[in-house]
Image (tube, rainbow, N blue to C red):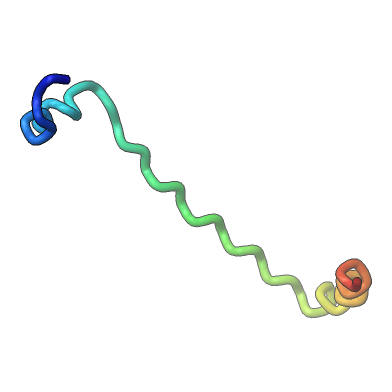
Amino acid sequence: MDQPIDQCLDTFWQGDFTLRDTPPEPPAPPDLPPDLSELLAPLYRHLTAE
């Protein structure tokens, strides 16, 4: 390009293009019933212990 950039800005974005939508937020995980979370808590602590 031999033109100064301030003279090229009007033609820079000419063409066929579309902007992508932002992806939707992922759904929140479902709440576990209290009895299931109590049942899985010891296993989770065991798996995450160092």
